[in-house]
Image (tube, rainbow, N blue to C red; front, side, top):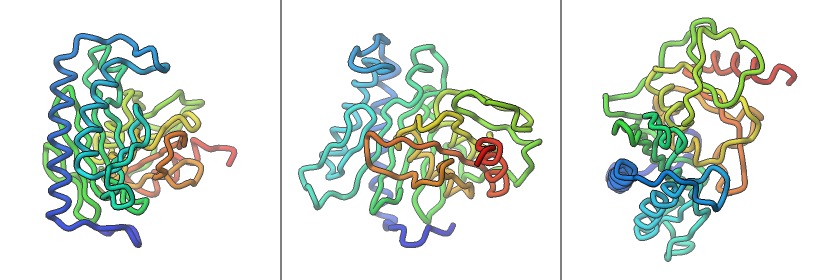
Length: 264
């Protein structure tokens, strides 16, 4: 698997250490969500639940203690005690698909992604309902509970199953589409060949935590992912929003982008 030009590459020992930390964190978040009985809103911002804050604390504390800066959806940017000597920034979505969790729908996850020099280098996404995990290391490929990940063979839009976030304005010509409600898992499903593409059909509705972990997974499995408006996807700004689109091949991505941006 080729890595992007100038993309930092960790040693196997370094990446294994990060993945082990991520795994321990996800074990704790899964236990917390499984045991949770409080599905009430936090009252602090729209769409935030009390469980989001509980899971956030389980993620952020160990990462800061390990010397990482942290950018979390729930608590923003926090710096490790090391300051400028931090090991990089871990982008965290403590509970992606929290509304699914409140409804008892088994499609919600914790997503963790280490970013160094503006590039994702290690990531893990765990479905907290099922325990299925996805992980990737830059230049070392992507794996899941089931083994090595590889996107589906190249195909036309007419044969494609496309996961979407938001409402389609028209029929893209796809075979079928699905709106699952957890972008990290949706994009990881492209990496394993369950979906052929993912398209954010809203405008700038996703923070980097929604897709960073899955971004590296899909890239390392042979897929492609871009912002629909051509901007950099990895931006360590809590206020920034992007419009991710992913696919199993460049040709399918191009078709989805044309259908999504017909006036461009």
